[in-house]
Structure formats: structure tokens, C-alpha cells
Image 1 (cartoon, helix red, strand yellow):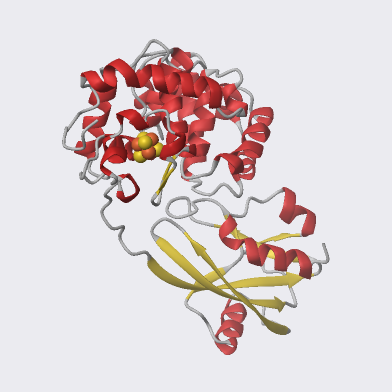
Image 2: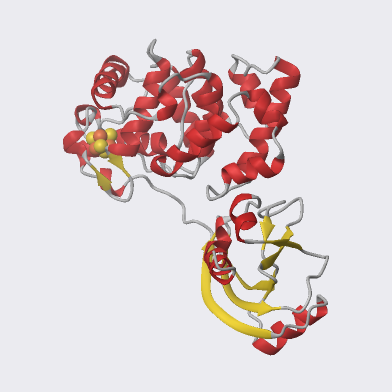
Length: 360
Ligand code: SF4
């Protein structure tokens, strides 16, 4: 096609050729993924929530473990929150797990434990946005609705040689409207194929593999040579840097843990006691004394950092042997630390240190 021809996704060029070309490619190249075997609504839902902001390879073991521990919507709705967070431990973005359980409770109450076969009803459940509702509706129920995620927006931006910011909701709406008009009968496969193309061929960061792409003959960005520079994205807001000091308080083969508040970052997760700021040793010792346990020995630990979506923690730490266990904390031995308490991956470095200090 000529690069000067401006198209939209519902134009005859795409409508007549894109679905068949994409589905033929998908039939030959689709990755074998655990959630694609037996795509029940529950399995599709859990996989889609896990895949938000997490790589496919990282999700696979979590998906299997989660499904065998909580095989039904009812099991998820009734699960102990500690077990749920333990199953999610390491995946991050724990609100996803909490919303999954909230939504499961609604599905159990209002839909007798079966996810509703309606885009609108799915969209109304906690934690389900238009993309996830579209994915479940189309893949599990065959409902003709698009499922537009970041991969699809990137592919669309390049196919159309568009200069619109893909974070702009109006662009997403245009893509959804265009796709809705060219959806083939195999809508679930079509939606998965578009995402798959974005994930494996039309790669981000200037790396599209146009030579392997089934849509290269239709792609305005390829024809114009602009594809590697697309999509246009507005600059992300800079992350806030937060300094923290983490304490591994050790008493009699156990370490102190406490629960985070019920709302906000890492809500209700277990954590090592910590405080804002990078405290020098004398201030660290004074704080532990304030907690009722003047430390017998204080050893500085290495620095660690963890990046959340909007904030970055830069952590220093201390190991301290204390003379008595304050009842304000829960005291976990090495086995409990591994099996009973869900600690967010933000504390991964200090978790390993704690296990070492506890002799595990
Ligand atoms: Fe993406 Fe290149 Fe395919 Fe266009 S031809 S959709 S830029 S991989």
C-alpha cells in the first residue's frame, strides 16, 4: 500500500484481508499456553488478570498452582486471604488478587458461581476493565467484542501509521470501534492472534519483525518505514523516590513481621518492620529501643531497591539481635517465613538475608 493512504481498521483493505491473514498465521504459530487448553471462563479470567503487567513465562507456574489450589469461582470466593496472597506472592500488584476475590464473591452471590456471558456484566465486576471483559467474553463465550490491550494498540498504531498517542483514550476507542467492524466468527482466536502478534512479532521498543509478519502487506507503518518509531507515547510521569530502612529483628531463631495497613500500597501484606528514611545506626538502634527491644547487636545490611508503578523504594537495612520478642510483632521461624506469610517481592533481598540469619 502507499504510505500516503490513510486508513482506519474498518476500511475495506483491512476488512477484506486482515482477519484471514491473521488467523492463518495464528493457527500455525500460536504458542501452547496452559490457559489456552480448556479455555473455561474461570481459567481465562484468572490468566488474564495474572498477565496484566506480568510476562507470560513468569505467569505459567503461578497459573497452575493457583488453579490447583482454587479450582472454582466458589473456592476463590471462600479462600483464606493469607492463602490467596501466598499464591500470588512474587507476582506483585496484589490489588489484582484482592479484586479477583471480590469479584468471585459477586459471581458466587449473583451468578451462582458462573461468570456471566455478557461483556457489560463482566465489565461491572471488580478489577475487570474493558480489555479483560473483552478477552473473557470473546475467548470463553465467543461474544463478538474486541479486546484491546497495549500489544494491540501498538500493532494498530503501526498498521495505521498513526501519530496519535496510544495512551489517549480516544485512540483506544477508535481502535475498538474499527476492530468491532471486522471481527470474524472466530472472535476469541482473532483477539488472541492480535495480542500474540504484538507479543511475538510486532515487538515494542523499535523492534518489529516485519519480515515475519503476516500483515506486512497491509501495514502502513511498514510501507512508510516508520514502524520502528511507533507508537507515539506520552512520557511517563517520573517515579517518586522513597528511602526506607528495613529491620531484621531476630530473637531465638525467629524474626519479627507485621501486617501492612488494609489500604494503600501492598495492603494487608506481611512485611519486615521498616520506616521511612535511611537511618544511621544510632537512630536505628533508638527506634528498635522505642519498640521495646533495645538491640544487643546491630549489623548494617546491603542496600536494595524495588520499583513499583509510581514509587521506587531505596532501602537500607539492619539485622539486630533483640533480648525479648515484643508482642507488637508476629515472630516467624524460617519455615513460617517461607510457608505461612506472604511477603511482597519488594522485600526479596531482606527475605533471603533473614533466612540466612535464621539458619535456613
Ligand atoms: Fe508490526 Fe511490522 Fe507487522 Fe506492521 S508489518 S504489524 S509494524 S510487525
